[in-house]
Length: 625
Image (cartoon, rainbow, N blue to C red; front, side, top):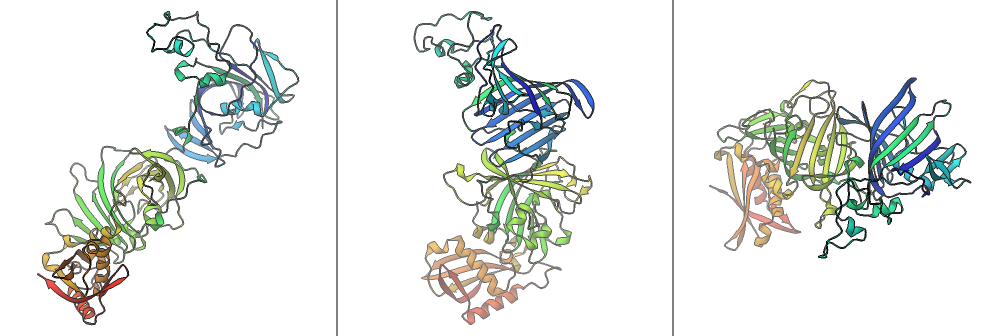
């Protein structure tokens, strides 16, 4: 620790001696900027005469967060202190972007024999943030002498021991070039609403006015005044600090050129962990992790681009069914330039195959093994992981131990959201030595009256932290600093039942001759309102596939209709044959075999549609031409 030899606080300049206002105390929110001049010091045995740094500091007394940023010639760092979470981090910036986040020890409990709130920087320099100076009065005691002289001004002396002393004086700066527009109104002049004109204001410089006005008696009152009525305040803190065992005590002068008193909770980037940086161990005790693991079936639309080419954007749509191990993406190839064409890819994890469906109807669909899948960045997840697909695969990858950790509050496309992040080493597929940071921004539902527990991502950012520079399939050459952006909309807005009945049906890959339309007659009439429900139609799809021994219902059972006619209820579906000319799914049930199995179950009176606790027996089936 350091011995604080002397600290002098000076605010502005006045030419004559004044009575001291003592060491002021302020523990509220503020934002300040200024400079730090360090003189006559050593770093690693090298002597430095003078060094100048710029600082920016902010403190949120509501959220209990503080940040202190220092910019020097060849270094930028930020000390972020989350007082509520009891975490303090050192953030480094290189090449214009934040690159690392290291947890640093928290200040020890205050000890009058040690200045524990001094920050020992990685650059072997010591810093006292302004906030620590502002609350010193609560930590130091007044010594036996009531006043002393500091630069010709009477000051009160505060100290913890003989070689620790703090001298303070409050003064104001006179800005002769500036008079607020509401000067007369605020300081006793006539209101602007009166017809009588205020006394004329001479052109600057205005040396006849006494600044500050007499109503300002201390710093706190000055800060309570409107911003355009507060005279400029300049602080200067001067102190010597000496490391134990050292014969040198560097002289440090901190000048505060801007100080904003803030009366409300602060939203400021300086108080947040920067994008693309992970601070291990950071958490929000008041916010539960998003319950994405319960999401089994959903769809989404997304706009994707990279930081290398923000104008090269792609729009795609996705469907995910973790129950049937299905994943579908309609996308424009990332590698195509001027006029990319849409195509669909359906990955069937249960079958271990994928299907490529071109937009042009005249082009045939293609079947391929998962080992031969061509990855595209818009797929987001690795197609090879679909056989073990869960919602977790989509958000955190195939490693089941990975979880999202809280990062910060943010706004994406004007929507308030919370950022959660995770480090991954498995993306993009086929890469080696690539480390990525995934940052998901989930909608903050507390900001909306229609609150629900559904997890709704607004955006995903994939930051490449480490890369070997080797070309990756579907991506190209990756480098540290590359960022992939995904802006989601309509996420999980479609009913899971509709996703299952309509999202994966492969009728585009079949000639009409390979379609079989069948109609079932039920033993009991069902109300029209029930027949229109997507949950009822989804149930029909699953039951038909089960009785027909079709492995993946959503791929081959679709175009489902239910209606009443002539006092009876009918259900009509289209059943597709196994994939045309398949070489990979030869064990799939054919349409002929499926119809046989359906007829057998109807004859045995074992085929029924069960919904809302009732069972409706299928009494008859016929083909529709």
